[in-house]
Image (cartoon, one colour):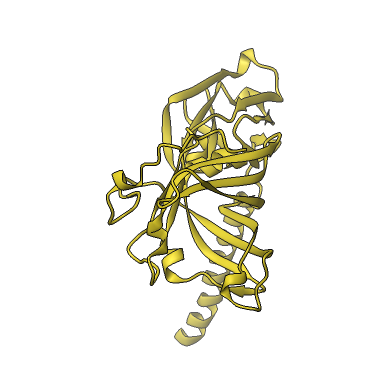
Length: 291
C-alpha cells in the first residue's frame, strides 16, 4: 500500500512542477516590450547622421528616457540626454552625428525608459559599426604587407612582410624595416620621402610612394599604385613594374598586386631601424609636389 501511494505521489508532484514551469514560461513569453527602436544596428561613416525612431507602447508607464553612449564598452561620460516623456511626442526621432573618435570601437547608444519611481521599465540599444573613409583609414594605421602576387604566385618574402609603412598627414612617408632585411639589404639604399593620392570624391583611386636612392639623391623614384581596395581593414594595391631583370619569364610591364593589413600605431615604430636616420636625409625631397 505504501508503495502504491509512493507511485501515485510522484506523478502528482511532477505535474505540479510542470505546471509551474509552463506558467513561468508563459509569463516570459507575454512580457510586454515597451520601448522599441526602428533600427538596432547600423553601419556608418564619420560625418553620417544617424536617425532612428524611438517608440513607447505605453507612454504613461514612463516618466523619462535616459540616453547614454559608450565606445567598446566604455561609457562616454560627457554624453547624456534626458527626455521628459510628458514633453515629447512619440515616436521620437533620435538623431546624432558620427564624429571623429567614434571609429575607435563599437559605438552603442543605450535608451533607458524610467518609470515614475526612477526604475528601469524597459531598455534598448542602438549599435553602430563605424567604417572609416578611405583616406582617414590610410592615415590611422601603419600598414604591413601580407601578400605580393606576380603571375599568380606569392613573392612576399619574410623581409618584405616585416616592413611597416606609415603615411603621415603632412604627406611624408616613413618605413620601419623591422628586424629582417633582404639578403643584399637593398632596402637600406633607399630613403623614404613622400606619398600622395588621386581621389574622386572620398574614393582614393591612386596612391603614390616616392623614394630616393641614396646614390642618386636628386632623382625621385615614384611608384604609382592603383588602389583596388581600401576598406574593411585591408588595402590592396596594384602596380605595373619592370621585372625583366628577374629572368626571361618576367616582362618590363608586370602587374604586381600587394595586399596590406593595418597595424595599430605604436611608439616602437622606428624609421630606418638599425640605421642612422640622418644618413637618409634628402634635400630634394619636397612632399606634395610629385604629381
